[in-house]
Image (spheres, helix red, strand yellow):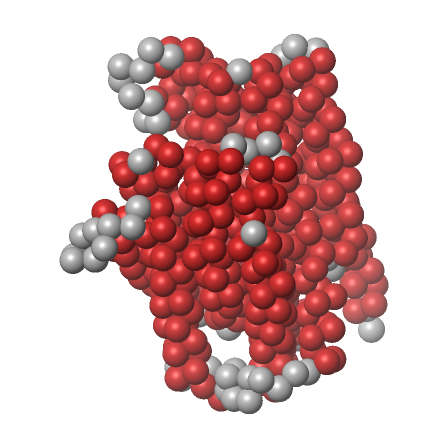
Length: 452
C-alpha cells in the first residue's frame, strides 16, 4: 500500500470511531444537564457515583481493548475459531470482573465516607450505584463487542449503535428522572435506572448484530458461550490487565490534579474543570485515531507485513499531528469564547474564571500535543500486542514525574493552576518520548527478524 492509501485506511476506520467517542462522551453531558435541572444535590451525588463507577469501568475495559488487536490479527490470518475464542473469553473476563466489583458498589457509602465525602452525598451515591452498578456487566460486554466490531472493520455500525444508545439514554433519563411519559418520578434513582437499561439495550443490539450480520455470523460468538477456554482466557488476561492499569494510572493522574487545584481555590478548580472538558473533546479525536492504528497494526502483524506497521503508524501520527495544529490555532486565538460557553453571563466570578481558563488553554497547546503523541504510541504498541512494558513506562511518567512536578510547580513554587498543567505536560511528555522509544525498539527488532 502507498502512504496515501494508509492515510485513507486510517481515516475510514478512525472517523466513525471519533464520532462514536464524541457521542459516548455526550452521555455524560446530558446526564449532568438533566440532573442539574432536577436537583443540585442529585447532580453532586451523580458526579461522585459516576467517578466511582468510571474507575472500575476503565480497569475492566482493559480486557475489551485487548480483544481488538488479537481479533484483528486473527481476522487477517483467516483464523475464525480464534476470533470466537478470544472474543468469548474477553466477555468472560469482563463479566467476572464486573461481578467481583458489585459488592464494592453495593456498599460504596462507607468507602466514600472514608475518602472524606459527606454522609449525605455518600448515601445518595450508594443509592445510585446499587442500581447503576449492575450496568457494569453490560457496559463492559458492550466494550468487548465494540472492540470485536472495530477489529472486523465494522466501525460504521459501532457509530450508529452508539448514537442510538445515547438517544435511548436521554429518553429514559427524561422519563425516569422527571416522571415523563407516565413513568414514575424517581430523580437520582431514575438516572441510575436509565443508565442500567440503556447499557442492556445497547448490548442486546450489538449482540444481535454480531450474531446475524453477513460476514460475522459464522464466528458464532454466543454458541456454547458458557464453555470456558483456559488458553484463550490466559492470553486475553495477559494482554488486558496492563491496559486497564495504564488507563487507571492516567485517569488517576487527572483526578489527583483536581485535588491539587482544589488546594488553590474554588475559582481555579472551576477553570480547571472547564478547560479539561474542552481538551477532553479534542482528545476523543486522538483516541479514535489511536484505535484505528491498533487495528491497522494488528492486521499488518497478522499478514506478516512488518513495513505496513511502520507506514500505518506514520499515517496515523501525521493525521493526529494535523489535528494538534488546528487545535493549537483555536486555543491560541479563541480561548475566552471557549471558556465563556460554560459560564453564565451574569456570573460574578466570570472575569476571574475566564482569565484562569484562558491561561490553561494556552498551556493546553503543548499539553494536548504530547497527550496525542503518547496515546497514538500506545495504540501502535497495543496493535503489536505489547502492553506490559508500556504500562510501566506510562505509570512512571504519570506518577513518578507528572504528579510531583504538578505539586511542586503549583503549591511549592506558587504557579497556581497553570503550574499543575505544566506538571501534567512534563508527565505526558515523558510518556510520549518513552513510549515512542519502546515502539522504535520493537519495530527495529521486527524488521530485523523480517529480513530474509
